[in-house]
Image (cartoon, rainbow, N blue to C red):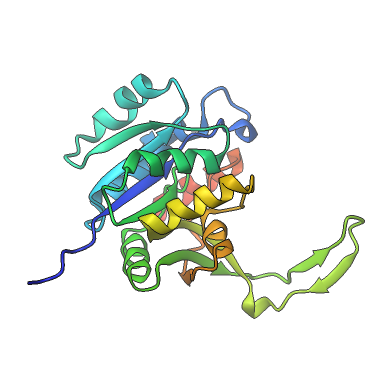
Length: 233
């Protein structure tokens, strides 16, 4: 008897307000080329064979709009489930994990406003997570990194060759990442990313090379850069 292959779902987090963009339209719904930014992200995951279903976490009350403007035009056969977000990104991810309800073995967590992620990177992240329990994409630091104190005085210069700048997607076994989020809740701790919560539980998170083009859209300048990068794809 052969082992059953792991079932993999994606949690796409797009529940932010996008206040730093300085526009009335939430940044995940802004146009990037000929379609909304979030649509670009979903299309990549829709085309990735490693992903069976998508749990899309969006702001409360956006269900009708998101279904009409984002999901229906995709005309995809891959199930996309809408989940209401929380007050923070961490709460939103947790809501997505709860919606999965143990139906999948692994989960890939990705920022909805990273539209230039590549299919191969998603698949590789899943493959490595299956072996190690957790895997993230990250890029090497190109500048010297310094740690400072509260008075902006340098405390130490970091070893640049050991510094990585984390990206998404981040992939984990479902029970591992769910347990990490529950532990963080019990401690009232907010991490900077999902991998940190897993690390705090003493578990291994493997790092694989990311892509400098896999940018997170935060400001209008980021959007312009993404438009330029999109033309080179």
